[in-house]
Length: 209
Picture 1 (cartoon, helix red, strand yellow):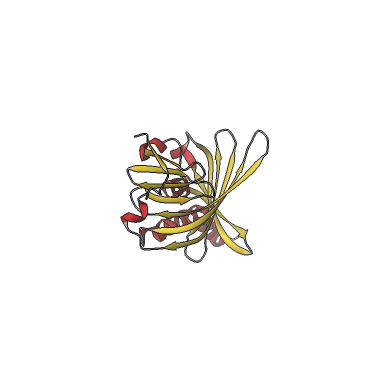
Picture 2 (cartoon, rainbow, N blue to C red):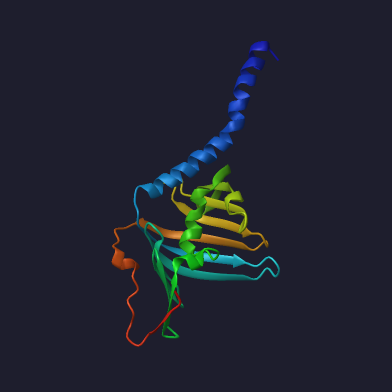
């Protein structure tokens, strides 16, 4: 190999080796910037849970309103969970009962909004492309060390158009897998009243604070 070509290769090789990491880092920053533009969002989610021991799968669907400072409202087929950042209301329409707790009670039991957005607090490891609903998207492998008490692996798929999250994949320390799919993610204007539970007539309130 001619000397000048060898020298050129030696100069370029470190840059080429760094490209995947740089790409992963820039994609994760881009996704973080997406959420900095607005404070409140709404979206629907599908959650697929796969048990490691049995391979059994279960699916849950719901819709979410999320704001700053732990404000969120989650609507599931069988219950509603609302938080104003301090208090948490867990409403079961079938039982005509609502439990009132403190948001701190969820410290070791992540609610969907916190789990979905926790990827923003991790570090990117690598990036690749995947096919999702007929579209090529960016898939970022994340370092789960910050949440090692809960997860052994984390991955997020983001839109190539605006870096918004499309899917989040986690594997817990028992090998159980969860896929969150996010749909119709939209920035919205919300007020504090959107994160307050309004007690329906005939519903029993149980205060556990």
